[in-house]
Length: 122
Image (cartoon, rainbow, N blue to C red; front, side, top):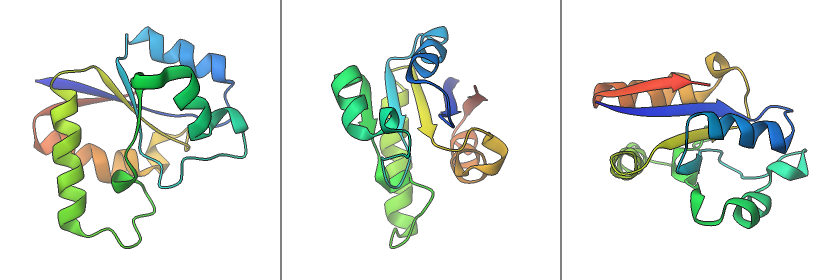
């Protein structure tokens, strides 16, 4: 069984987010926001690219605002995510801090659990 972690950045500081990622020895932060920007500029894609480099990946196909994304495209995105999770310790990130109000819980978690993943919300 593989484990996948999730977190929402909310209004944390960038340092707090990185510290939280380090508690699980992450290898790849997978950004599952439809739009990788925030009112908090330290959570914009350009900042993650600059600071995390190859340890950051934006996967818009798995975003919560799935306008125009077909079920086939979404399932292909899940398949790609699973391939990554089989070789790296991944953390899925969105903006919603409370996972119970986020697509990480309502949409991504059920798909991952169906495929035998343990999902832990940080």
